[in-house]
Amino acid sequence: MKNYLVQGLGLTALVLCGLIALSLIPEGLRVGNFELRKMDIFYDIRSDNTQLLQDSIDGFVPDTLGYAASDTLAVDSLAKDSAVTFGPMPPVDSLFFGSTIEDYTYDQSGLKRFYAAIDSIKSQGNTVRVAFYGDSFVEGDILIGDLRDTLQSLWGGGGVGYVPITSEVARFKRTLQHEYRGWKTFSVVKNRESKVPFGLNGFVYYPEPEAKVHYEGAKYFRHTQNWNTIRLFYAAGVNTPFIWQNKDMAPQEGILPAKNGGINVWKWELPYPGMSAFAMRFPKVDSLRLYGASLENGPGFYIDNFSVRGNTGGPLMHIRPDMIRQFDRYQQYDLIVIQVGLNAVTNSLNNINWYKAELDRTFDHLRLCFPNRPILVISVGDRGGKLGAELATMRSVPYIVAMQRDLARKHGFLFYDMFNGMGGPGTMIMMANQKPMLANKDYTHLTHDGGRQVGYMFARLFLAEQGKYRKSVDHN
Image (cartoon, rainbow, N blue to C red; front, side):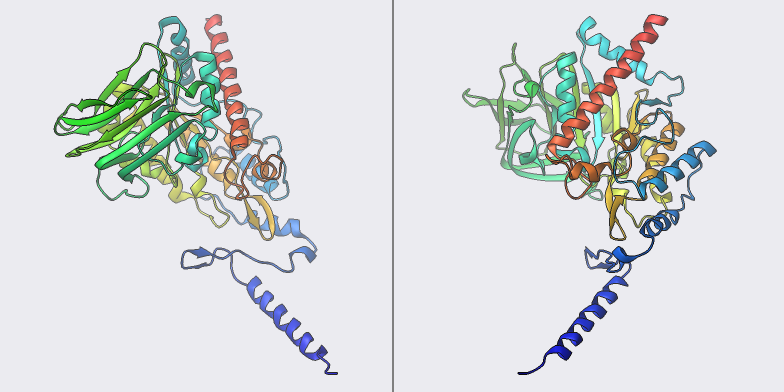
């Protein structure tokens, strides 16, 4: 009988050599569009794995940040803790980071103006609108859907508010059933060099002949099932006929009046919330651009979700200020929210100067687009990834959070620390390992269940801030 021991040992040695060679591949090496993951076969037998992770984070030098000494020390400490802590921990920067909205407006009145507007809903029958610019963290109304529904229960309103014509996540939403066909879609992320006139939400939609869009209320949320008003935002060089249909009504013929170079609104409403499905078809499309619609049952509270997948903040500068002002004449937003940074967070990032400069310009642009409006910066949340062979909060997260706070302070904005508000280092890993799962296994995005928890967290935050506002009013 032949002895295969020598061949077996040789094969084992060959495989071991191959694994050792793979361990020497540097982290972040790309082959085409594919990024190779770092592999370390000796990780589990190292004498000091904690020190390995610690050294990795210590190598990140925030040489572009100019914080006060107390902030810098705190951020450094937080980053170090994230290397060895895999569950929520209390914030160490400050007792109020993550537990309150920080007001850096020049007269400390940003939140006062917002809550004064909310009080006017019941006292004067007004409508309050929030424009929420985000990235994939809130796409599909994750988080925002639960927050909107809760605040509409408290302050009135119904319907999902502003909706796009097309959507990459139409079948993912729980707030709306959305179908469409026959559209060319341009976005500030994918088509930023196209020079098309992007709309308020960072998109513009060009219909082909017989293009169609259909909206139908979903039954998951109480307040988005029905609405009584639909407004269609568009631009047309000539009067353009179209066909519209509400629920079981017979199709109706309508006209979209021309408006020289400007944004116009077509509106149809009922005296009661009798719309649960609405469709539009566009047989002729000469010079027609669509920008979105608004489904609402006011007066009340509305959060318009302007999420764009891959948005780091910088692409918003491709929306012209004059375009936003045209939309805002109709919308009259009371609060502007920007929540970005997820796409800038990596373990290989070791200099955030480029991103700080990008957000600095973006914040200037937002101030130009929405003059004299309170702007709330919500920081990037937690994001998990591999450090060596161990899962941990990505090392750039706390530095980006601190940088976003610094820019909010510089521009006189409001700021909320979502990283610490959600629980700090290791939160996304913990949420992904729970049953039911509160985060996906990419350790980056929330599930619908996780979005509900974070949405409720923001609702409690809004109510706590309203309580502070009312105390200040009563005191004065």
